[in-house]
Length: 91
Image 1 (cartoon, rainbow, N blue to C red):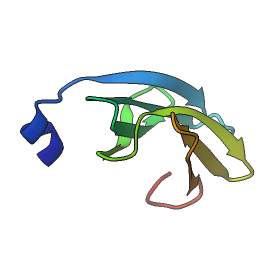
Image 2: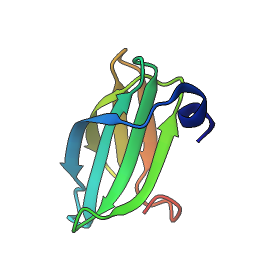
Image 3: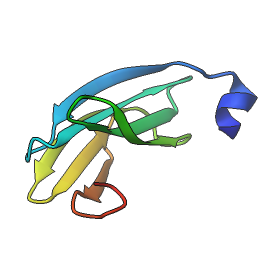
Image 4: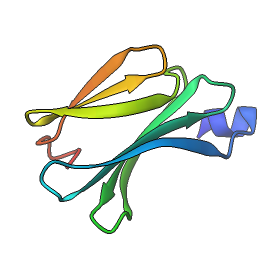
C-alpha cells in the first residue's frame, strides 16, 4: 500500500493466469510500475480473489509451473520463487 501511495501506481499488467493442478482455482501473476513491481494472486475456481501478494522489488512475474505440490514462479529476470500449494495460508 505504501508503494502505491508514494509512487501513484494503481494499475498492473497480468502476464499469466494458470489453472491449479487440482482444478480448485488459478494462480495469476504480473507486474506494474516502472518494471520493479511484481504480484502473485490466488484465485478461486470462479476467478474471485482469494489472496494477493505485491512485491515492490521483485520485478514482474511472467510465468508459473507446477512441481509436485509447489508452484514455481519466475520473474522477468529469471529469478524463481517457490510456494507450497498445501500451506493453509496459501490454499
